[in-house]
Image (cartoon, rainbow, N blue to C red; front, top):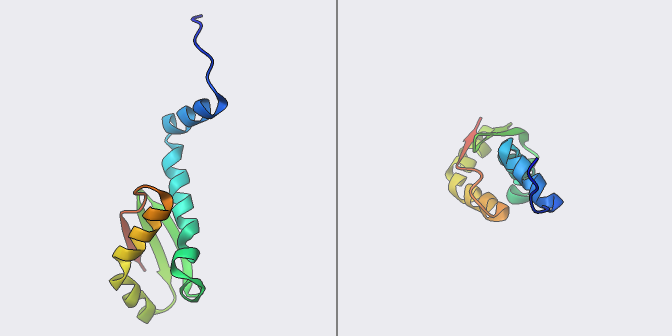
Length: 96
């Protein structure tokens, strides 16, 4: 067995997360958790569900009028989420 230099626990965990592609899933969960903070409690009250898959956030809203308004503000919402995450996690939002 070949000896290597010791690694910190953080480096080992980071390597494992990247190898198993868990870092993307963790970022997507974090972006979904930011939704109430980004849009505010008034809009979040009409949010039925939200899910993030492959960089696309799917948001189900109970108000058709609000859904149309949110479609117009989609770009700024994506930008604010990605700014808070520190990198591009969300590249599209689909309102349902």
